Amino acid sequence: MPNPYGPWATLIDAGGNPQLSAFWRRRLTMLVPTSQTSPALSRRNMLWLGAAATLLLVLPTFRPDAVTADEPAGGSVQSDKNAKVPKGGGTSATPTVSGVVVDEEKHPVPEADVRIYETNRRRQSERLLQRTFTDANGRFRLDRPTTHDPRAYAERFKLTVSKKGFASRVTGSYAPLPPLFSDLVLWKPESLRGRVTGPEGQPVAGADVWTLSIEEPIAGIESAKTDANGYFEVPDLKAWKDDGMPMFTAPLTAKHLAEATARAKPGTGKLLLRVWHPDYGKKLGPYSQIPDTVNVTFDKPAIVIGRVVDPSTGKPLRGILVSLGNVAKLANAHTITDDRGAFRLLLQGSGVCTLVFETERWRSPERRVETVSGSQLDLSEIKLAPGDSPRPPAPSPPT
Image (cartoon, rainbow, N blue to C red):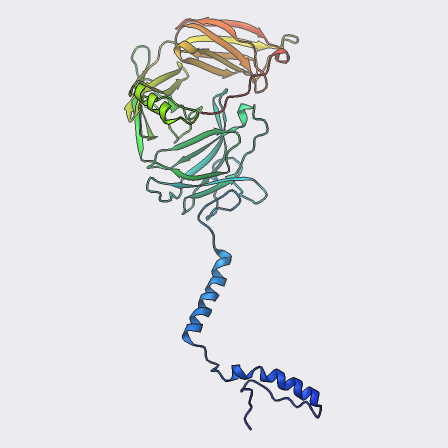
């Protein structure tokens, strides 16, 4: 006798108990509609099951294209083995900074060099904190440095991105550093070229040349050195031309923008290129477009020397920042006192200058000194009482 419940059902003998027989009969009767259909799946059902299986496999590994600070970048982070800096860990317990580097056509730029610097405007220094390279999708991730004191100039940060064949990118300074940089565009490179000469017209070899984007020269990022004939080229700059428009720090109305445009005189604005040599000090070279030629001639420097000591003990004060500047002539110099408390400054040009002594936490009252080009001024011992000096004002926000 054929099984009425299909080939997969088993006949159960419930014995002579009519209640058990009725129970199993009801349960097995529920299988009858299924038993009357073919056990083979249709092509349509197979397609649906295949799609469902694919979704179950894909969804757990699906990752959105946007990179945020809470999500690791697509590729592994690789720190530079030659740089003695902390590696970018990107762990979930550590705040991170991430981003995507692209070219002008929005294509990802792999193997771009991404760095975080601690920048100090007063000491005009850049200290490398971390370094990594973008992955195949142009993504990067580094541990995010935090700011403990917004008044401290040493706790401001810059992000630099560079790769051969592109204009370098310098963003900042920030306090704190933003957690996400989306679509950091690397543009086609242009150059600033020129020649640096001395007071007698002789070439100055080994002079450092760099832009105002960085506080001190960083090899491969908007900087160069003069050759034996005094020539230089900064090859990784974005094209720029002065349009005569002033820089605005707040949104403008259409009326104010129209008025500013009407007053604009293209070609009248200038940017400055820093040039420094240990025998001459620092000088600024103006330019109004990129690419351009910038020639700089050093004058005979004014030399200011001295020694900073504690007024009560007479002991030398080491590590004091000494700054000398002539605002009218855009001339400045700075140095750090050595173990003897001594300092030596070279300044381009003559005139009345401002002399300031400071650390990260305090600043002395300004002193007036007069410098003469080609001569030396000896200030002898300067007695300084840091405890009696006022703290500097909080730094203004970056523009």
